[in-house]
Length: 139
Image (cartoon, rainbow, N blue to C red; front, top):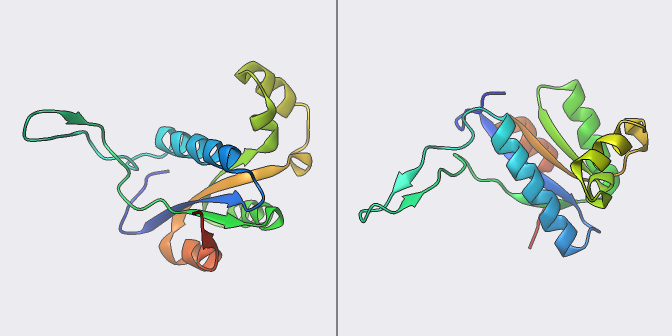
């Protein structure tokens, strides 16, 4: 996907019952994955007047919101049907010690049986706002 800040909005939605440490882990992983998979999401590096380099940051706000786990699953379903890029994150991923273990375990289970603890969404501004505008901000 190619991100356009004038047309798109992005957000991360975390299971409201997830402990703080796991919530921060989920948000971090989704943010890193967004940066890797979404063209034009991160701007170029910048330099201060004394030539200290500051790596590029995201072109738009990235709110982290809270929702019940069943709504996170619903957002995944809606994203699949519409023009919304979704980055689901599972409890299974958080339980694995290595990426190889994650690959083995996730490939042996149907997606309907994978518990989601968070999801990142990127899509048209109005649609993302409609889906997430009533959710509480993670504080």
